[in-house]
Image (cartoon, rainbow, N blue to C red; front, side):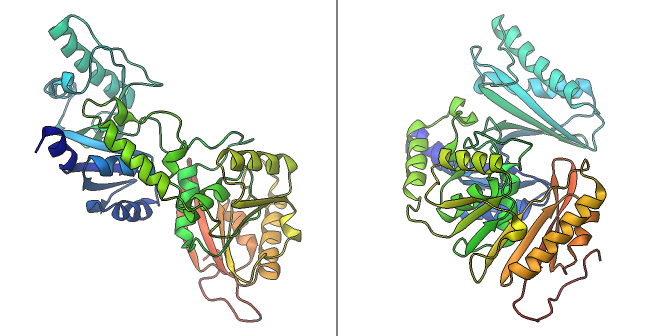
Length: 397
């Protein structure tokens, strides 16, 4: 067996990072790629896989932010420890003088308080090693490095990893226009997965903004790997063991799995023509114009486009809106859902937990999530037909 072949089939540890609340969704995605030893952590899932699966995880995982390959763990109680331990790695195995690099640091319960300081110290240890051996040093490029390293420090245990993703995986590459701060693609995909949508029934986003929910839903229904939209190279393409033929095969296999015929009715509405236009531009850029419908419409005047389905919305929860207006808006959302969307499961994602009480319907589920630093909830409402009372806890309970 050749060395390359051996490498290809060797299993190693993999850590996939995600957002708080999406860990179980990501664990399912990794299991679907036949990863071994899948274990849920805090904003991360660890598993074991080979080089092909590492490439596949970057291409297919909808809720991963980064796919990391850890290669060393050690204890570091102080600066001296950290510097000396980092120097124990032979960095020429990963990095050549011509290549640029960057270090991402995350600290939890650590004696070190500042991640920038830890990144600087790690960088010094690496460049000092090169300088001692060759008289020259590789450069740092924080924006587009050839090699991105990740240093995670929990208490005084340090894990060094290669970042196989490079640019964050939430940057899919299909968005041209967003108008205002849009929903992160990873969060949108995670929310859709949490709804349990079957990828066949009607999917509605009645306040669709620039169309992120619609596009992520269409990619799921059509079995399109999100990585196929990416324009920038992956981190692993600069690694010394990069297997171009293997990645080519993974890419072509992903392309072949796309379903061409529309699998579900996916509809978006927005009252603002600028948003409808922005959404449509993003949809066309993603090549999904035959899969998604978008209409300029006032949600409060719409009716369900099918007997049953899933409705997902991310209404405004911005603090700049006057409180009476926002409470009224949420009351109208509740009334419209109750009167016009019977038979649907409705999911409202909001960061305004007070205003959400004005929806006035019973929730059957409340999932805590974050939108950036905003504490949010994904609220589920089962909208029964006729006079049947819905079960679940009272809103605000």
